[in-house]
Length: 419
Image 1 (cartoon, one colour):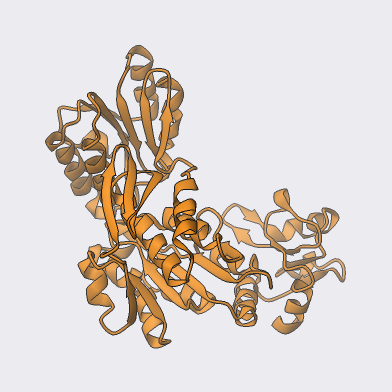
Image 2: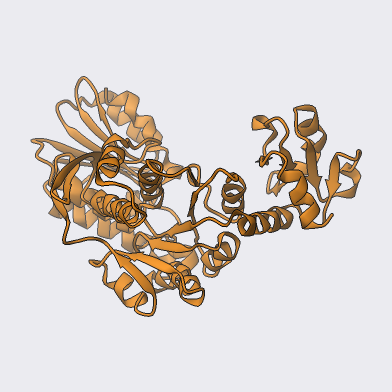
């Protein structure tokens, strides 16, 4: 089937699904494959659950006219998204970076939604599957799209740009994330800057943090919109970020000085796209972080900062330094291993351990295979079970507690032990 013909079917409802557990009525079901599953096997089930058509790439599963056979389901999904992008004819903001992508994307979404019908990446569906799904979630009612793009190797951002064709781009920062795939910080910078390369080639615009030297250097040949540093001012964080914009005080629900930059980006983009000050203020002040990202949880005994969605050396350092300046009498940190660091792993874990020794933090718990091999006087636990056993016997009261680690560590499990 030609992509134009498939688009005709898609455009009847503008719905696409890839998981029969969450199937929607009149959707197109794309039978994707993974390491442990074959979506082709569920093509018939999808139809019975309400899908209009199922798209498969194995001939034996084409058992009815409602099952469409293609050469490759994933490539067809990507081609359909690219075709849809060209029909949308709306501005799209492409977003990437080492840290803060999802929070920044949500903030931009909140701000722009005050004026426009805006569609943004859901959660962190930001890879070669998530980006096409994000585009295909945009309908003729969408006025602005926001597409988060993630990568752990070179050429990935470049590829994702060919699908979403951003009119605007923003890179949150360049940090020590996915070093195993990128090889080095220089590799990270090169990989993330593929967004800049696309913007330059296609004469598009980059939003830029003027305090980030790498951003300034990499965007010399681009049309840029810098943060409004004359009108934007950081005021304090204790624990939430407070700032002023055009002489109006904005009290956010986000912790950490690092979130000031994320807020500044959303304000700059909102201002450029003519969202009023009143609506920008309303959006920022109403946004609350979820999904284990810099959440503040008040219990009967402690104040917990749960930042356990992910971690890398750059985000870990930023979180620790921000936590250390809080005006709290007693501070405890629970740090879990950082993954995907390759041969840099031991050096980076040791650097974080050394940093904890320099900061005004009372107690440090280190959890995981990597942290357990560092040199330190802090308490080390090779597994979560070991930490759990220790906390069951240890009373922690009237402390501010930072919990941070990579997603695979699932450190949010300690919450029930800290009530």
